[in-house]
Length: 338
Image 1 (cartoon, rainbow, N blue to C red):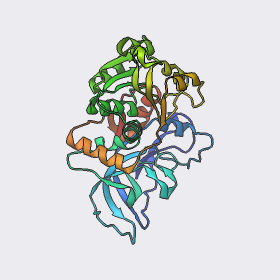
Image 2 (cartoon, one colour):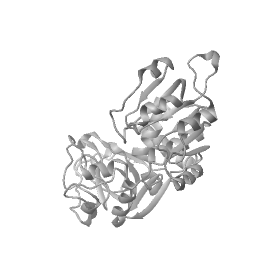
Image 3 (cartoon, rainbow, N blue to C red):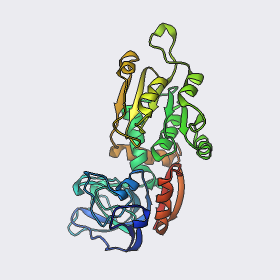
Image 4 (cartoon, rainbow, N blue to C red):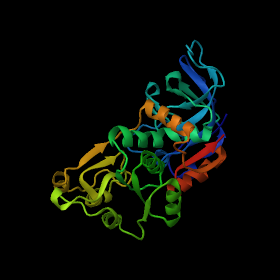
């Protein structure tokens, strides 16, 4: 089969599009004909290598995979499934020891094998490209916003690093619920795309201080209720680094700070005085549940959200898409089609 893979760690020059052994499904698995695969923020990290993480080589990237069942492993109890069923693969493959495209060979190929319990049926009316955009980024955003963040209508929400897959989904979910959203990006071009996704206010952080923007729009956070209470009710910060303590100044008394990653550093300085004085709730969120993916597919089917697709390219162009991801030119999801 044709696949994109790397045999050594490094930059995008290590990626090759060529022949790769076609995987054979074992008992309890199926082989899926890949129709769309999406990239994620961890793909460049896996390509470069992450200290302490055992990454099998050669490696095929791509954790978000949608396609059709092509065959079943010998002796499999196929239950509800049939050949040609349209399926989304839950990337959390505990039976295989990890996550697709991270510690398990990914889906940037013509075929991939998957355990039958990891299959989720794609509803009629949902394209392969839209389905493939959902699992890792959108699933993470949905769990963080709904199960952990308890976001409700009229919440004032600040999204840092809003142009990525997680951020773009956070904007869409917040607007669907009826919240007011301020989205941050470092690019004027990205700002226009975030407005198109539904953000009420967009801050270009290369030109404007988002803390001052929050205070100017929603008021200054106050320790004592008698002075009123401004700021954002919810801040989504998966950047970490210098923005961690900085965003405390924009969060309301009793506000919720949601974190699902640390792209700019996982050991930031902090200021405990803000946490106790303003009674912050700091809520971590780790990945997604199958129910998040099922709910997201229903939302797409019903038109409540529309995945933000930055690009849809042939699989052979994966190197171009990954380079854009590394250069932070992507808004939403980069999708490849075998």
